[in-house]
Amino acid sequence: MLMSETMLRTMRVLLVADKELSVRDLAREGGVTLSRCAREVEQLRTAGYVSRRPLVRVERKWDLLMAFSHGWSVRSVPSEAFEAVERPEYLMKTISIAASATGLRHGFTLLSGAELLAPEVVPASVHLYVNTSDAPAWRKSLADIGIHRVEPGAPRKVNLLLAGSPILYGSANIRDMWVVSPFQVFADLHGMGGIFRDAAFALAGRMRWEGR
Figure (tube, rainbow, N blue to C red):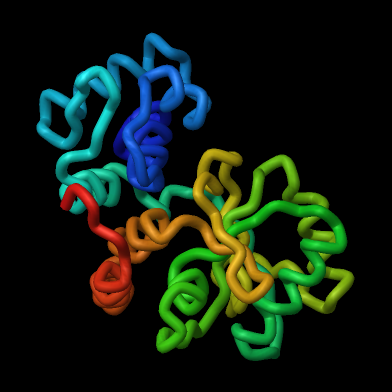
């Protein structure tokens, strides 16, 4: 993680929001203290990403997204790998059904998230964010549907990315499957480089850019 957690939370809310926000509402949505949120907003205002009159308005959304993408690293997120023989598309549906039955929150990302946002994308594996505290429940739930954990370095088909609930801010249900916000998917793809970065810019063409 290259930025502070509070700055990342503040930026996530600003990217997802489709309206101007008070600093108080921004702090509440991001789970950040009011004083810290005010400091983060001032930094963003000084950099020209937002204005505050007195509500906070995103002025350069694309630039804000790129700053967020450079400040966040999906590679630094702890993960657990699982093996499965089925196609990723089938696994995503199966995992979603199991999660719904057990009440486990999650959000698909990287190419599996992009597939939900831009159906022409074909993922080779499945990546989903889950709450770190839910990891034991996820292991059991996946084992119950025949998806078993493997050691690091072994072939993997399903990857749990262990993070906190703020990562799920702005998630959406698409075709009965949960995906993190398109801005988070973009940042994750961009941070992986190569063909993932190509997919990020393809996804950007489908996103809304008020304040770009």
